[in-house]
Every structure is written in structure tokens, then in C-alpha cells.
Length: 224
Image 1 (spheres, rainbow, N blue to C red):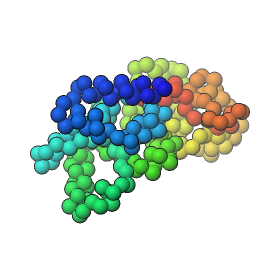
Image 2 (spheres, helix red, strand yellow; image 1 turned 90 degrees about the horizontal axis):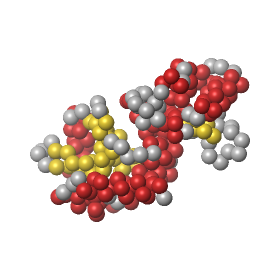
Image 3 (cartoon, rainbow, N blue to C red; image 1 turned 180 degrees about the vertical axis):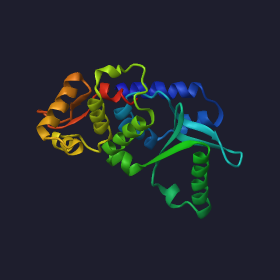
Image 4 (cartoon, rainbow, N blue to C red; image 1 turned 60 degrees about the vertical axis):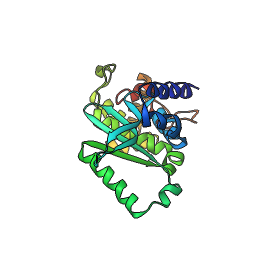
């Protein structure tokens, strides 16, 4: 229910700021896969829609107009996120359309955009991996750039562990962390438990006894 409320507010805000073709696209073209990207990937990973712009309009390299599924506009970077379905329009694309799509992406990169695309299969069936990719990406680009975060709460080793958990493609066990740090699993367990008590990690869903960890909402604030 929280997602649905925020999603409605998010779209409503951008519709109020738009006109012409972008407004039409937000009303009619912001479809199933785009919403699934937000609901299954973005919202669980990030928890808000700040800096994110749907159906973002950019000037085309041949003086036309193109629309990006999502633009993440947070200085100093401009990032495009695409949700790409493998539907009839793609399978039936002719050679000209295929080449045009590649050149369109090349020009975005040339203009300073970072471009990341997610297939429908990954969005619908590999949510966890996509979520971790988003966290890893934003963590790498923006680090601890968050005015609300008190860096004194974590020492350098704890920050390293939180970054490792954020970048992992699965929930992190003491054994996995021990291999990464080159320490005994029991020492890794103590580090994870300490970060859990500080509120930066939480037990992976479905575990009555904590055997593995993922980022908590506070942990995500290190990156977002």
C-alpha cells in the first residue's frame, strides 16, 4: 500500500510538470514493465523516488526528441535506466530500427549519460540481483554523500562490511564475509551482529534465527 501511494504521487507530480508528448506518455505509455521495475527493483532497493524522472525527454542526435524510461538526475551524474521487454515490437524490429537504437544509446553516452538497461526477465524473475546492482551502482557513484548520515556511527571496517553486503548478489552469511575479509567465521559473525545491533543490517527474510544478513533501511542510507 505504501508503494502504491508513493507511486501515484510520483506519477501525478511528473504529469503536473509535463505537457505534450511527455504528458501523453505518462498517462498512456507508462506501462506494466515500467511499474514492475519500480515496484520490484527500485522501491525495495531505494525506498523513495527522489532524483528519478519517468519518460524523461532528451534531444535526439538528429534534432528530434527521445524519451528515456527513467532518468536519475543527481549531480554530478546523469543516469538512464531502461526497462526492456522482449515483445513483438523488439523481435520484429528491422535492421534500421536495430541500428537506430544502438546509435541512440551511443549518443547518450557521448553526451555524458551513464546507461543501464534491465530486461523483462531480470525485472520479473531476478529481482534480488537487480536490487543489489542498483545499490552497488549508487554506492559506487555517490559513496557516503548523504547529509542525513552520521559517518561517526561506523568505523572503517564496518563501512567496508556494509558496502560488501550492499554489493553482494545474495544475503551475506558469516562464512561469506569471512572469505571476503580473510578472517575466522566466528569473528565475521561478531562483526555482522554488531552492525545488526547498530541497525545497519537486518536478518534476511524468512529466517526465524538470523543466519544471513541484508541491508536495513538505515544501511541503505549510506548509499542513497
